[in-house]
Length: 579
Ligand code: GLV
Ligand code: MN
Ligand code: MN
View 1 (cartoon, rainbow, N blue to C red):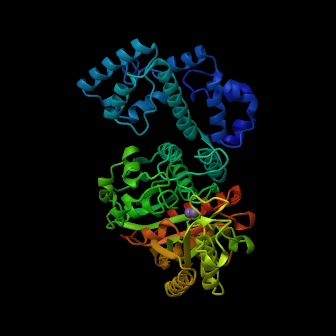
View 2: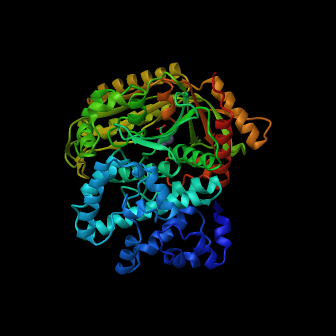
View 3: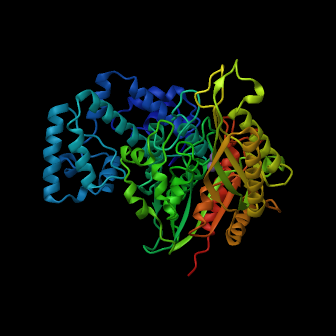
């Protein structure tokens, strides 16, 4: 492997030579990006090379496609492939075709080449013979323009896999670059939004899948859209350590909430595999599809499915456009009936660990880059609907009004009052709307959300009860109806002492600090659901900018990402496997 730093410093001819295998027999691609150095990460180098292909002439693009060998074609049999292509085709099992499979591939390859005038190109990582054949069957029906785009996209993916294997870079830069790239995929132009099963969400899942494949993991997508990468241990029946976090986001999100806990383990697994390490246990990295509850107001869809706690009644929830969760899943090719079979069996699990940014200022203020989470606060979330009476803003005297928005204003203040004054207790009204409101109409309806959390279930329940009784008083006094619907009720979850100890030891070793900061999490995490089936532990990583999160100015430094990756690596290498 060459390092990115070395590549950045090479004279242009050597730079081109070092990357000659990345785009099949097409040195003009590295040639055209040599002057854009230095690249800050392998991903920016990859993006520059893909851009060079995108803006090349159609003849050059066709020549690039034609530089590729047929899959399992005659060149493979004659041993005329580049070393990269030979390895990739063997990886998909194409070297062991049955006579029937070989005949079918030859026939389809023939049809394909005759129709398009170039060979069928597919990034075969993650494929097997059957899926290669079905991809070929599908793609041979495309139009030529579309197929040229698909072939170039596949060539870009192949180049990404090859670069990841050929070029090394510091873990911290790799992690930040991945987070930056994922953040480019959004439902909105002006903000990062990635909510459950939108086009952006599915594209995000596809990119995470590619990075897992590039790290050498075996990847599956389950019935709720979790992207799951397996790194099997030295023994087939070895127990499994789970890790992961969510890839969905809030509206106008930061780049690291959730994603860090997927990308960091991928980078570390790739690094360990590249250095020849084999773990004595299996490591499973999970990109949970949904945690934030943005689209269907139901949180933890991904982890609940894996923990066997998915409530099928949730399938009837609808999004803002009235589309049900069930319909949404079906349209995305997911089978709601298969959700129960996504549940993991707790047998043979070593635990679930999650790496997450702290999303608060504690570590930052204490100059501690990493911390061990002691427990995750419980929360109760409700959707509240207030119904009063709409009327003319100019004609109804103030004492006669049944104004839903004014009742809501009182309720917001009641939440603040009931949840103030106790450390660890917090209450938030994060959504507040007058549906179909107008400037000259008294609000007849107001909808709001109430989220109450504490690190003690007793304290949280008492605060919730106090808010409910305030709500009743407001309803009576203002002659409005206030309906509450609880959408989440999870208790406070302690982290397993054994895992806290292991994290503390790893942090101590990589930072050299005599004392390791332990702190509770006020934010909810997939880990609290996974705690239902196995031991759970969390590593917090300091974020910058005052610790702000659920906001675009959320930050994480390259150095802190690197340190967290080293702590995670140390944790994996020292994880005790019961004999
Ligand atoms: C998850 O981000 C939460 O709301 O705590
Ligand atoms: Mn979040
Ligand atoms: Mn999160």
